[in-house]
Image (cartoon, rainbow, N blue to C red):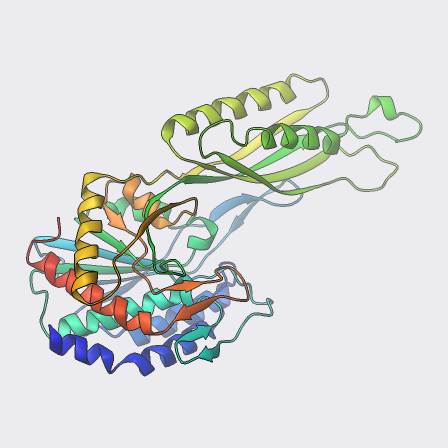
Length: 400
């Protein structure tokens, strides 16, 4: 084991250099050319001699555009590597390679802030996690540390959108494995996530009746006014269930100021802590849609759902947490502190599909989704060592 750790210590500069090269390539979730470029780079760079590599074409997603029309959008490929798939014990290591930064965003390049901090787009969320996976697995295979562990790496291109293209793939994969590790970043002071809220994105399209705002205003039905009323009502749901937050995020509609607008579009995100709250919210939403539909001259159509169910602490997840805590202390790292969060990730989906997982095994970082995003570069090595220990423990049947 020490030989693998020493080898990883010697990789620190290479890890940082590789992360800079990866993060300097834009792979915004809707940048198809960038996703393809990064996918090709990853296929060449991951380079697992004993694993079978393949790319998986993902289905398109349907969205409602800002005019209320349904459109179909494409994504990049999912990338998969399998090693010892016939092993009795099988582990899924997963993370995304897309980022929130589009091709035109000004935040496109990395810069070194100090000897242990690198700033750049996606360095923590979650390209640093990819670097951890690659180096830990190289160490495990080079030193033969997990002969009875079959592992699969899955990198998807759409997590920052809520994984609309890869959700069905994740659900299918869950049954193939005993345990899942995901490599979202640890929190800025090192905490890891034990429990997550559920989340869903929704779009409403309200139809009204156009009319001349001067000559026949009374004949019109303002979709914009009705949308504002509808969304303000949803905003009022905040706090009505424990942990429920509803963020009205976008509205659009209308045109010439002398025309009563006949169409308006709104979007929101909702976060909920348990299935009972989800059922309550869905009932409230149905009632409010029905109320608009029953108002003369208006139509109301809502699309969206809870795509990431709440991820709760289960006995299996707590066993993984205990093992991670033990191995962290053995490495001389600080005791792991576990927190709950309103943020969601693919760990929610895999847990809902029956796969126990821990989802913050990536490096320590902060400033996510902003031009201040940073990663602690020494934690790339620390988390790689931790993963090596966990893989050896899993291979020996001592993880769950």
